[in-house]
Image 1 (spheres, rainbow, N blue to C red):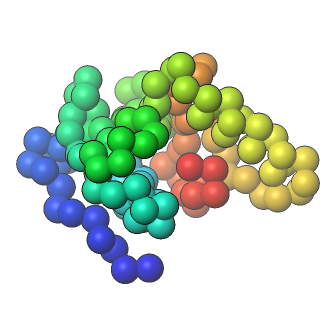
Image 2: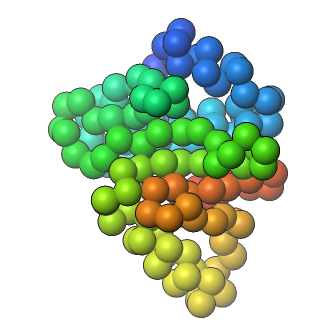
Length: 132
């Protein structure tokens, strides 16, 4: 699928560049996935900004969905995180989807959850695209 993601804004690029190489690569993969999914779902253009020092993606034309922030679960682990507002139903829905995939024998990439606010995933192995 051809990429239609815009150039990364300088202030956002600085945040990605400050991360260790493996974390930066993984977060940039998720950024690409966010833009691909937005295009597939036809939600319109996304705004890329920083919120709480994290790259954040928000729909600006349709106003649909909730902002997505990219970061790390904690600085020590080096695991990546996709954050959403904790009062949405997204994380519980992803938990159900993951459980369903495991119960049907579908291989799921290793992920974990941080309350109702984040999906945590490693810089190693395949990106859990089907869950994210």
